[in-house]
Image: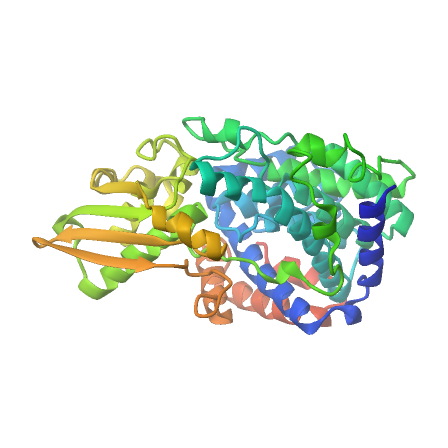
Length: 465
């Protein structure tokens, strides 16, 4: 019994030393930090992020960890809560949605434990890998259902399970033993929120809590590690019991323990993030890529465009994509995002600014955009799960202009990966709504050389006012 928890704890113990990490894992861990921390600061442009900060100021606690963007120290669970809301606020975080859960939790625990940059990077790499291995199994129920039925399952979760990796990473930084790490796994599994994604998808207007309450999950991960350190116990066998976590979270027939654990410590799946250059659902990115290419080639003015026809995947996260009342609606509306691109709103916080949400020209242009399901998307996915096929047709000047792609920009395949300079450009765009240029440049340099830092103080000073 307890094979999964024991294996995860052994893995964490093996790689808690920075020098044990493969160089490519260190490199990719820095890249996801570079991407995520800039986005989190930009998340102050979102109401989600603002409310997270407000709640942190109400709750306070022992001054242990910093709020990104605004500064000030709060208890580690409270900081994890607020920073998770910030990181997920723009819906610009990389896929799968591991960063807004694992990074805030491990970051807060690192500050609370006065960890060095090396210790933080090691714990973050371990936590992300555990989260990714669970995500590969549990998230498959969603992608398989969309491919087969054109809709998501009636009951499924999206990223809630990342609490396990976040708890393990936090536990390493709080000095947990292997036995205590197993207990933290069992505790965090019971802290995991309900798999209510389908319920969320059907709501109009969209709620801020989205498909997973990232803030609650990040906070719970920190607390699971903290309480395990005090001797509290959890059901560390829950991944191995017939009525345990896998059966309750989704379905028992989805669970595959062998796949979760295979080559653990040898193959690192957490190095394969898909980055999001646009602050909206990934299902819309290929359409945007094609539309931007057509704009670059032909320089259409918005009033010269008669219609935009987007052909891509089945999309069920927003029942009425023309109903945009708030920032979360905006993140899941293809017509809204295409209209922003047509009117040259820069991808980033500006897309969800109140000016954009109320722009009459954007609202009018949305009516020109039609979203279609293209069966070619599902066919390509059968041979390559990394594909995000889209074809966009723009009618203008009495002609029809067409662009198509098999992959989204930012996908982890050759020719589409974001470069370090592109990640830096995104950081500047997002963090620039709050931070001065000198802090932005120093923060990026610190992230890329984080193993040289004796603690995280200098990084956090440059990530906040």
